[in-house]
Amino acid sequence: MAYKITDACEACGTCMEACPNDAIIEGDIYKIDPEKCLECGTCIDECPTGAIIEE
Image 1 (cartoon, rainbow, N blue to C red):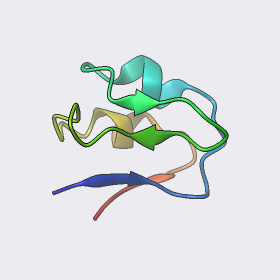
Image 2: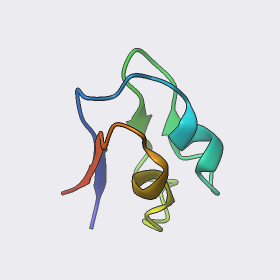
Image 3: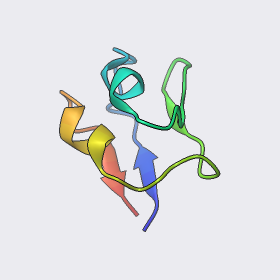
Image 4: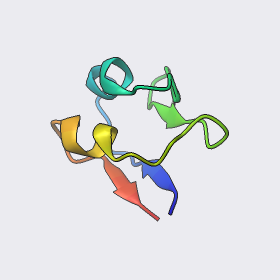
């Protein structure tokens, strides 16, 4: 299952710091690199705004 960062992202960096495989790409709204993502769910658990969803 793939993960997606939605428009609710505030670009706080919490998910990027928590990601064990450096799969988060910084920007106005962060993105997840599907090639690097391990689909571990750490980013979902850590996101304070609930901006990361499973697709």
